[in-house]
Length: 274
Image (cartoon, rainbow, N blue to C red; front, side, top):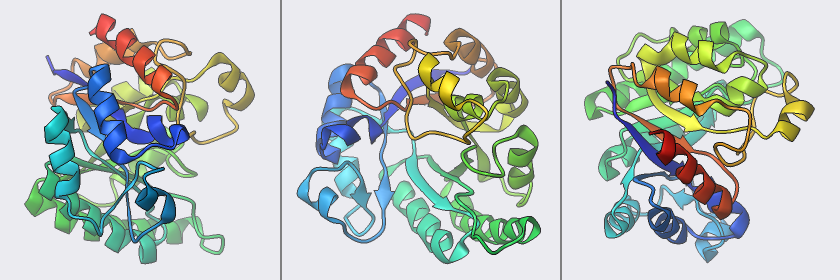
């Protein structure tokens, strides 16, 4: 039986205008074992001023590693979403994120196909995605880093679409970062889809969707940044856990919610089930 760890994406402090360091300390205080930092290129005002949780990949990677060690948490992965359909952005961004992840001990780098260019055909987009993933996989493989493909945009909103992206490059470095909330909002059966990919699962975004958001958006969107607290929405976490328990790999549930209060409610609910 696979071991399931409980982590949290640092998005839970975004609306609180808090820094990466504050978010890691709060996650540890709430009892989370893992965190999933967000990384970016270059410099921007809010992060530099301590009002946003994203970390620049121009910083020393040990900024992340040392803060996590200080508070007794580990990195489940890096949130490094970049548009696979736009290699001029995503190739170098993903390669740098993979090197960054290797240095801090984060085993997974999560991404998705991103919004497509407005002038390319679908067939052209798959060629572009194959190029991007091929370049990224060559950097990930020797470092033992896994690339987690998430369903979040126009092509990955169906099981067949996500599989087509996954099968573009034959590499042991490529796996699935399953998002429970995005799959549900796309109008799919989340549990059947999770069962379909469980043997390729490398990470899971534990995102619950409120009844109100479900009524307003299900079948109309391909994803959402964060959900409500786990246990306060439409996702059946007992079903999710039962499927993930049967995988061959230990999996971290990285909670994606929007507030500190939701983060506290999520870990309380998941701990009872685990």
